[in-house]
Image (cartoon, rainbow, N blue to C red):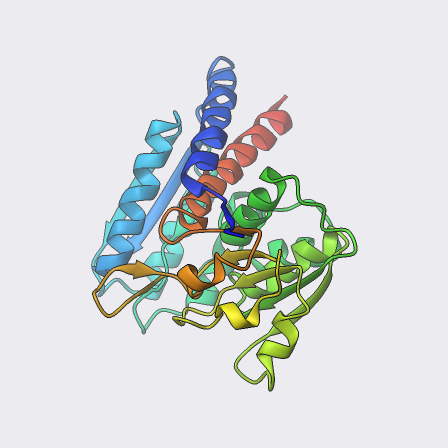
Length: 286
């Protein structure tokens, strides 16, 4: 049995069409959803990510502001800029691209963003809302994974989900989202003694550690659903994930490819969060 692909590009296109329609409805009321993207320094990967985010906004009819600063920008200046964006009524979402230069405390900058504009879902208020099941912005990558499971009509109730990775950006929020849907969740990481023993029990596996071949075919039970969040380069320099795709696709029932899987969904959920921030702002303004 060869696994069915969960096509992130196709699902993203569908969701972005919905975002564009909702943005148009807001524009009819005189409100254009606005996202400010702040880039400090000249990290090449960050420049690509930022360019893709800005283009996706424009394509969906959202207003996007890109602010680029030298790597020498001080922490105080960046915090002041974030505060100005917090107070700008035309901006509904603020994204400070990570990583930041070493002399800037990234967590301090994230906490400076208004929770109402935290469309990345990294603020402690957003994390608390997710933890307690309250309304708030979900981090875009795990949120995209949930939409992918939804797209195949997968019912998580009573299923065993294994998340490989415990980062604040993917692993931990991913586990909480799965838990909200009544899955039984196991979080694995670099200190987990027997990863294979746990993944073989899993109905759903989310691989999110940034390490090639962390999940191979012998670690997956037949018919499991596998979501690959990893973004790595193989020996030939081609993009690949954390999963041995060629091997695992012969065992799993569904699998996400890299590229073209979770990646496009991350940007799409950023658009969804920005749109929802604008809709909330419009409701409060009435």
